[in-house]
Length: 409
Image (spheres, rainbow, N blue to C red):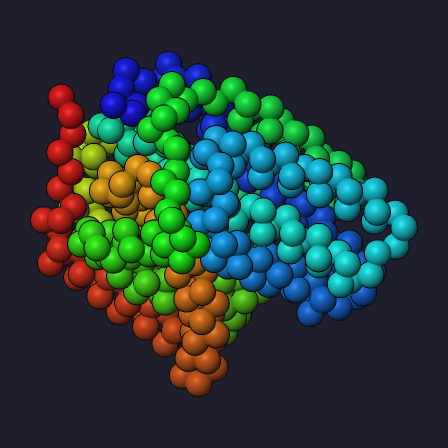
């Protein structure tokens, strides 16, 4: 059985994956900060700088649509290794070409290519985790990765700004190339004993290969239910974009941009704490995935409701911290269910299908929540988000019997 006799604390392959993905995530943040600074300094246009995250999101959405073809051709470890190696090469090429004075469309083309390649790593990583750890350790593994991801993002945005300001954008890109290289070397150390169990199914036609992930989600009630919950939650998540939170800080709380930064930091501290809490309570979490989803969802709804109604700055910071654990625990439980219920051979494809849904709807959510804030006030957008989180938790409550996973002895 995949993952037998592989405890996290003594698993070199899991630690290598953990370290490698952390270095890659840190590099992703640093290079985005550096590129945004380069574009803004050369164009003096906020709109031009904003094209960087937009281009990245579009590329990842497009990547998810073609992911089944890539996942059929290569094993999961090979995909991670190939993607990280290609990202390193593309960024190295961009680094040397920037000195020649590239135009904005060319720079954005490089960003698109890097993000397009990166879009295959998330489903591959999530599908690889069950092959490296025992089934009863999945919650702990997911919690470790989740808390590390959030810590890296918090460190990355802070360190990225400091690095660009003190060392310059080009040196920051050089640091990113080093981080990408470390990630590639670390992934080389990931070993999978049961290789035959991780080979992707090759369907007889392209159409069959393209729809396998979608079919896996549709035909399994637990996956269909968690995906419905993801859809509702994603529609709510548009309120947590930087632009809307800045409006909230200014108009609802009467504070400036610095307080907006404090709110972001508070939320990341909360999510890191939530991940560590999930590591500590991993045995309970693994045995009570349905309860964790419902409790996390209801807590997120309640805290978001208070956030939308109380215009007191220190209360807003406290609620940002408390929302972090609620979001983390719910998210870790949903990921664990997805990994446990999904067929091993189709897991990466199912993740790619799920990510395509999430990326698509998040863009719509940002636009919709922005329209609500403009028409009815920014607090109304957060109130609507609280209602959507409640609906998602209600779906989980009525379907909680689907989420009971039996662990091996």
